[in-house]
Amino acid sequence: MKKVYPDAAAALAGIVKDGMTIMAGGFGLCGIPDKLIEAIRDSGAKNLTFISNNAGVDGAGLGILLETKQIKKMISSYVGENKLFAEQYLSGQLELEFNPQGTLAERIRAGGAGIPAFFTKTGVGTLIAEGKEEREFDGERYIMERGLFADISIVHAWKGDTEGNLVYRKTARNFNPMMASASRMTIAQVEHLVPAGEIDPDHMHTPGIFVKRIVHVANPVKRIEQRTVRKRETV
Image (cartoon, rainbow, N blue to C red; front, side):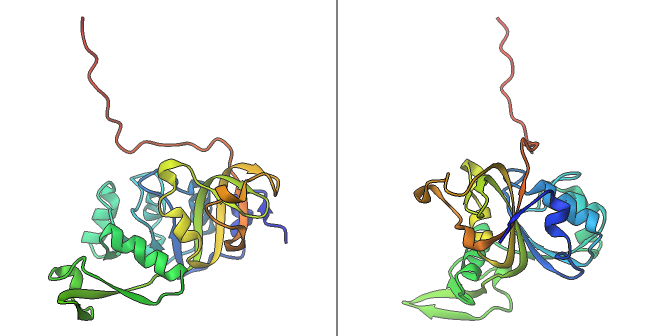
């Protein structure tokens, strides 16, 4: 089965529809599938639910889908870098299901492993626990969290082969691997596309069985959210 598509628009053609739930990899602006996000914007699909650690920033990442008001709901952990997100949420235009970061990661991993729910101590006795089942194990209180599973996942990989085997690099190896296994269809954009057989099986992070479509995005723009530098010393 041919998995490589000429561009992001072609890879998403006939796939993205109104009301879908989509997982989007990345941590801040690191490891985000920016070209696939742009293609979703251009598709015009509305009322989307996105599962992502954060919502990008104003003008970048998922922030561009907030500008077009294509996102109905975010299931996220950290949204503090996006002013437009705050404005839409506070005005009631955007729904938010807030998660502790580790809980979000485990909800995605559980969904990919076929685990419908699990218990965690994180959030017990806080607003996070409201409306959730609580049980006691070995004298400790735990709350139940549901696994997450999406219609499609869009991920970014440093390297991939034509069979969809993926390798992530450094901080970009964050939510991308677990999201690649937690949807009905995973679409990957890769920086370095190589023929099948060139990646050592021991170095693969996501097996190609999970990936249905691939887009080669060479030399992607890698933005920095908060550039912190030391003041220049004067002699």
